[in-house]
Image (tube, rainbow, N blue to C red; front, side):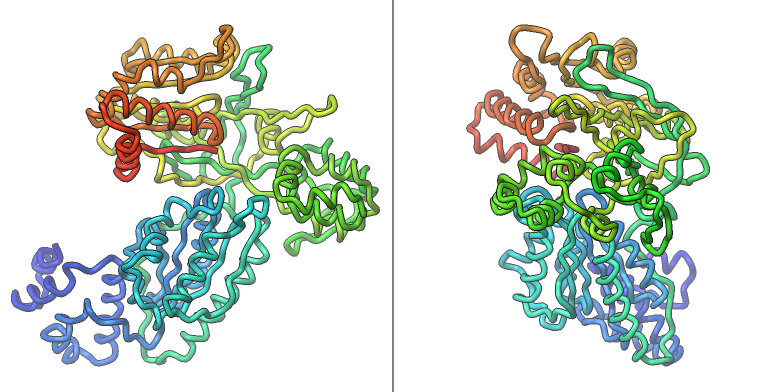
Amino acid sequence: MLANILQEFASPLTKEQVDKIQAAVGDLSLEQVNWLSGYLAGISAGAGAQTLQAATNSDVQTLSAQKPSLSVESTTILYASQTGNARALAEELYEQLKPQGSHIRLADMADYNARQLKNEQQVFVIVSTHGEGEPPDDALPLHEFLFGKKAPDLSHVKFAVLALGDSSYEFFCKTGQDFDERFSELGAQRLFERVDCDVDYRSQAKAWSGQVVEQVSSAAATASASEETKPQLSVVETVSRYSKFTPFSAELLVSQPLTGRGSSKTTAHVEISLEDSGLSYAPGDSLGVWPENHSSLVEQVLAVVGLNGEQEVTVEEQTKRLKEALVVDYELTQISPALVQFVAEKSGDGSLQAIVQERSELNAFIKNHQVIELLQKYPLSWSVEELLGQLRRITPRLYSIASSQEAVDDEVHLTVGLVDDVRDEQHYYGAASRFLVEAEEDQKVRVFVEKNKHFKLPDNGDTDIIMIGAGTGIAPYRGFMQQRESVDTQGRNWLFFGNPHFQTDFLYQLEWQQWLKSGLLSRIDLAFSRDQAHKVYVQHKIKEQGQELFQWLEQGAHLYICGDKDNMAKAVESSLLDVISEYSGKDSAYAEDYLQQLRQSARYQKDVY
């Protein structure tokens, strides 16, 4: 391809020289090509045309085997993210470092050639931990490579790691720890100690990034003053001006109930305007929403801790009233382990101290309590500094987008289930779900788009898809159908959907019925669990239709699961394994391998929460 380009634009190179270049760069990765462009530019700037001619005739034949020799050390930021936090921090760091020049690179681990690692000079890793200490999906290939037999000698590589996690889980920041320890074991030089960040990570991440900027700037300052800096050729998409940390202030257009009166769970359809934002999304992506705590909850907290909401406080160098800070800046629903530990120690309550000492009991306590309950049950005398020092900073919530931009233009739609836990006749709501469900028209909502490349429609619109979901797990499938209708695809579409009752909980019923009537929806199997004496769930419907489902898979269909990860998703996967084993005539090991092959070929995708 390179030879064709050179010839097409009438380059001054001879055919023999073009052939040599083609032979040298034919197997280079994108990162190596980016480096090579800077190398040749440096030769051109520093030694003139004669040196460039010599390099073209001889040196270029061996460039792919050489390590970079720039006076400024090449710097690569590697990230892997499950919910977007690591990616957002990596992009933010990249923007800070980009003025340093073309030796700064940003790469998603999923797109990174692991074999290139041995050719790196400085690597800064930002990685989250998923589930019970597991690497996020994007990190799996690199993680497996580093812990495999082909792991390279990294003795000439300098590195540092920023690990993201949630201390509510037992294996806090384990993936970051894995990378940090393995880099060191392979001989890499640790520039500074790993930082393990909890959910409230902004201050620690900012300090870590400051160290990185200082390290890279220092190296650049000692580089040759004659070396010319060229524009960066990034290995990721251009960073949008609106992101997690710079959200778009959008206008809420509609928030209306989807469930009928008498439903056991309130679910709303929410429409938000993205007009003038420039934000774009694809079906399967998520919308990040920065919630605001309800004013009544803020008043409750202030009353319990005995503080005046009108007094001024400083948050991120901004002065505001305490009441305002508790609305927009601090988490008042989800409890952190650190807050429970602080209350246990300061109150001296033996039962709470015992809970803190036992991980399983602490996790159960956190899951079944909100901040206001903890403060009410264990009353203390609080100063403003203590309260704000112990509360987590509020974090955005991600919602699967329930629309296609092809169909709704400058809008984005969400399907929001209200979190409403009742304990001792008191209602405890989820911050974001209450914020969106109770929102009034024209209310401002801070939002950003979180790309999800692991939950996408097939590139070929003629490919069949099988969509499995329960409750609000139906959201992305509405976007799938809108997209396929808008671009007039020919692939068949099959929906499995479950919820408690047909009369009250068939979300987007009229739309699904219209799609079925038009033929866009090829078939639908519904499981309303409480409309009969015995409970029927989507996993039961999968087994009932197992033979045809397996035929669709054999014919190339893509398979999707969206919804609750702890119950529905696990039960569905178990049923899928049974179906594959039964209708293939093979054992369970074959079924597991079959499903794994679907995963690896991106034909089996999950969006679970």
